Length: 196
Image 1: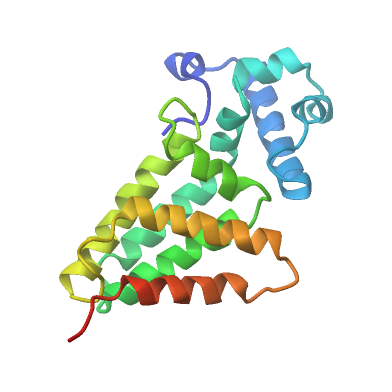
Image 2: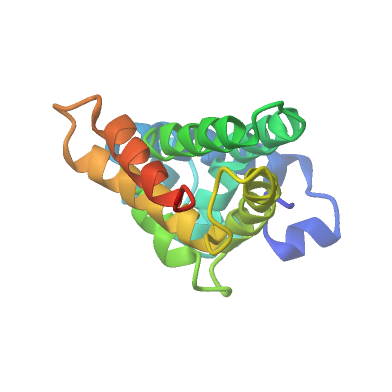
């Protein structure tokens, strides 16, 4: 998965372009952490010491910048899914991974909303992050279903939407730090197969 524009991935960046890219990325991380994903792109460019045109050459839109900012977290979530893939308790592994996604989405105000909208928009640069997450989550979900712990009609797309909705609810209720965990547990009760 690339972290720069398509043109930049076709040929190596010049040293000054690479420095600009790295400064923009660093300032975007800081701005998104401080102000959420709706932080001013103009301010990010200014704090990076470049013009807005330079920002748009590297990141044609906000979702492209968000996709680049979240590559480290994405790599971490994918690595965690690989670690959990062989767990003795597949349902517990799935829950642990979903909890990690909620934690990640909670790091940047507005991320969960953006991920929810990008998950259905294949033209969004941010959807590039959604595809490998869905694939990783689906592998964990299938194992949990095969173990009999999760109903067979549950889809990873629905689970990802629920996870982002939980993160969004937690973001809107910062005075209740236990809300995300309670909502996740309620969701998981609905995933269990009906027992006679």
